[in-house]
Image 1 (spheres, rainbow, N blue to C red):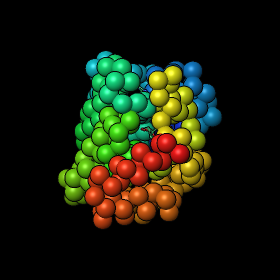
Image 2: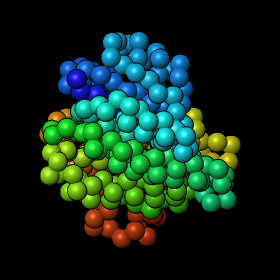
Image 3: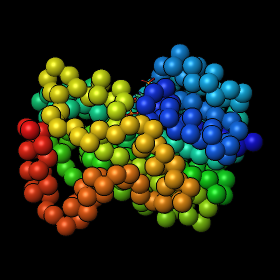
Length: 254
Ligand SMILES: NC(=O)c1ccc[n+]([C@@H]2O[C@H](COP(=O)([O-])OP(=O)(O)OC[C@H]3O[C@@H](n4cnc5c(N)ncnc54)[C@H](OP(=O)(O)O)[C@@H]3O)[C@@H](O)[C@H]2O)c1
């Protein structure tokens, strides 16, 4: 019996991962984690037998403890860990509340690291650990600073972790898509800041997750999906940050 653990499974990218992993037949049990129990229950009904849900706020110590308790009690053999729970809020340091500033770090960085470390001892040889980063990992982004800086952490963390777990036969993939059509923007945009006006190309969740599934199958470390994000990655290697920041700011104004 092999388990797939998916955080952020109640919507968007996490939800799509659960469905695509089910299709592969590589996992016969699922643990779906997010705060909205009813959304998780809907997906569990769709996935069928062997699916469990854990309604937990991963930005809190209680939420993290609930995952730890599950692992200690069930001692599962984990085939996939998909760390997709995350959120962003547009705005500069005066516009994003202290709650969200810390909330983004707690969920996007702290919870992701804690869950990875907690689950790795249960992962079998040949398994996949996918950390959801973002195209924002490549550049410091004024007006999206905490989110992008947290995702840059995930990018570096994942690359180092990949070396640390290689001997165990675990493949780490850091998934860095550009804009994806999900509920992400309901939380990211607010009356104080709507973020960049130009959010093109906006990709479908089906497209980016299919791309990430191929990357996991090939045990690739970095998955960027489309030509636009590949170009951002390349530019970040050759262009100085002040130049990249000016490009981002002009994109925000367009
Ligand atoms: N959409 C994009 O353009 C884009 C691009 C690149 C990367 N990403 C990344 O992709 C990941 C998934 O985002 P998405 O686009 O699929 O957005 P989404 O549809 O809003 O999904 C976010 C998921 O995270 C869960 N979540 C949020 N806060 C949580 C908390 N405190 N505890 C537990 N779970 C929590 C949500 O579930 P509940 O609300 O039920 O808790 C939901 O399942 C995020 O890490 C995001 O940064 C998104």
